[in-house]
Length: 178
Image (cartoon, helix red, strand yellow):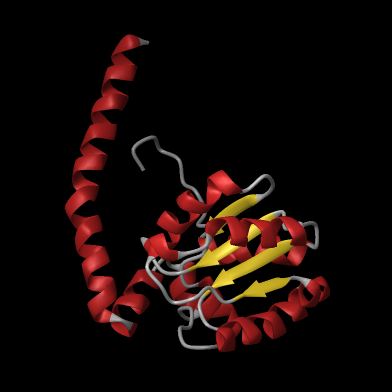
């Protein structure tokens, strides 16, 4: 908006779907619960038949400091996963990944947010296509989970004006320097 460019939306769920569909990578799916993981394996198998032979591992319900990171890393190394999708909820999944990273020798980890729930058919659903086309998925999510989403939206609304103002100032300084 500030620079006069219009970009199409490419959200995390779409990235997840596209990478899984490519059939180029060995993947591991960690977190959530076994019922969701089983449903996810079945649903993703329609996008990529290779998924059936990939690792789906329910992480134990525990504090982020209580995971056995070396053992998890050994399991991932034995599996040979190129991409490790992690679904533990924010910020736990990000902390988990930062603690697991020093133990890994191969691959990339990606926090998936609600993608496991969307693609497993368990629980959460994506907004209708017309809302996605008009970039209104956040409205759908607010009405679906008001307690969770209103807090997140409040944080965005509180920080976005400042971010936009600082970027606008950077743009002005850059223009003066040219």
